[in-house]
Amino acid sequence: MKDQQESRTGRPAVPAPPGTTTAPAETVTGSQALVRSLEQVGATNVFGIPGGAILPAYDPLFDSQKVRHILVRHEQGAGHAAEGYAVATGEVGVCMATSGPGATNLVTPLADAHMDSVPMVAITGQVGSTAIGTDAFQEADICGITLPVTKHNFLVKTPDEIPHAIASAFHIASTGRPGPVLVDITKDALQSTTSYRWPTTLDLPGYRPVSKPHGKQVREAAKLITAATRPVFYVGGGVVKSGAAAQLRELVELTGIPVVTTLMARGAFPDSHDLHMGMPGMHGSVAAVGALQRSDLLISLGARFDDRVTGALNSFAPGAKVIHVDIDPAEISKNRIADVPIVGDCRDAIAELTGRMREEQMPTLTPWVSYLKDLRRRYPTGYDLPTDGTLSPQQVIKRIGDLTGPDAYYAAGVGQHQMWAAHFLPFEHPSHWLNSGGLGTMGYCVPAAMGAKVGRPDSVVWGIDGDGCFQMTNQELVTCALEGIPVKIAVINNQSLGMVRQWQTLFYEGRYSNTDLKTNRVPDFPRLAEAMGCVGLRAETSDEVDPVIDKALSINDRPVVVEFVVNKDAMVWPMVAPGTSNNDIQMARDMAPVWDEEEL
Ligand SMILES: Cc1ncc(C[n+]2csc(CCOP(=O)(O)OP(=O)(O)O)c2C)c(N)n1
Image (cartoon, rainbow, N blue to C red; front, side):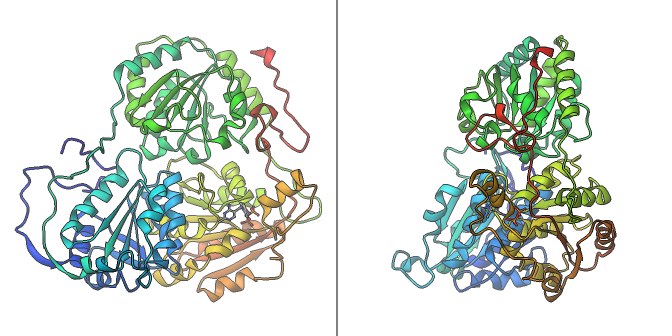
């Protein structure tokens, strides 16, 4: 197979090459073929819930010695757990659901994985092939529904197709730009028999992901780099996905070019590195936003010029030329025209660029780097402590990071706590940060943390969640308690849908329409946690913070939920107001930085 690539998982996610001998075909049911195929691709953990149409598959799954099935409480939890597993391990995450409502409950995680390029395979049962289109009980056209939010999907109507569909799904999910693939299998295909044969080739017309960057383009990029005086590496999630963090560090240290890491790329480059200017974007650091705006060359690596990073596009990085490296040609010049497009895997492209740059003479970047370091020194991403004795949410999150360290895995929900987690947790390693960046899915945190802990059982896994988000998917803590998945969840309880409240404060004259969750009374989070089989803890004053974190860190036989009752008026700063230019970033309300550009 010409386009066969090594999977990022290091596992045999794709079939053996042509010529490899296969065992003689054996007669099995479609369901048995499915379970065997999962074993063959090396899937060890499947998150799911059974139901009528997928039920035949659950029977042989019961006997599998290789595939562990984790019975979740909601299919959305299965999908986000598969994502969390995939992000933390680099392997393909797998989830399973029945037809109709089981499948439609997977739509949000599929869309989430699609936006954030997470390798995931979802397997759904479908009604019998002759009932398709009849509005049969629990029928939903899940292939139609998920067409725009999957990298690919398959409707499988005969048992013979199952091994090929599964092999292809894992191959497509994990190669090129990773993403979610759905395999929808009719009940009769699961029930009838077939001769099991693992495919030796994959028939995927038109699927030819390019991973090797074009040498000429790399040379052009090197030319632009040596001609620049204000270059910056704009690093996105693609660097994490391609496993290019070590290569990136080498290139940065060779060239001395400063770095910004997007929300999806936190950890791709160590926060502690002197050339790291922080996270750009709507809630980015002044130094990172300033670096992009004042740059004369953006070297975009696996980033997609998302509107949350660019702000108003017409005033984004106005003086910069652009080198854009991306494995997905559709990303290049989508939002900003690239002067040098490089289609390819970030790891290969960075390695080639490094080789090239070794032969080049870098101009001095001292004035530029000093300017950015000065911005970083003058405008650190900080916070004020509340004066009324209430807890600072930022300080709570910072203490969790300080006491736990950068080797832990951290998942977040969506909202203010997510941005504070991105700012104040210690990011030193790639793939240790899990969050819903593209879709912004409340409810992501608890199940994603569960998936990460399944994939990384020997590591500490924290979920930093909001009181709003937590109420969307906390039921998966029951799964964690029963399945022996001891995650730690911090509920940052500001009694409100904080991020929305912040926008109401800033843009709706403080009219707090429907953002007060009243979670100072109901639910009682520690008691809810206890009811779900977890340890429930609470901190309300600053002197309770460290002891409660230490206590949570000391419990490893059960999941722990710590409620931190925090000040509800804390806001996320800096901020580029929606629809405005990055040039108008504010460090606090009505406080703009002084750029002192003449120093450049
Ligand atoms: C499923 C979903 N519904 C609605 C939103 C819109 N939204 C974004 S942030 C947010 C508030 C989140 O509240 P909470 O979890 O308490 O976190 P906080 O912002 O207070 O830290 C809402 C409602 C969303 N992102 N996702």
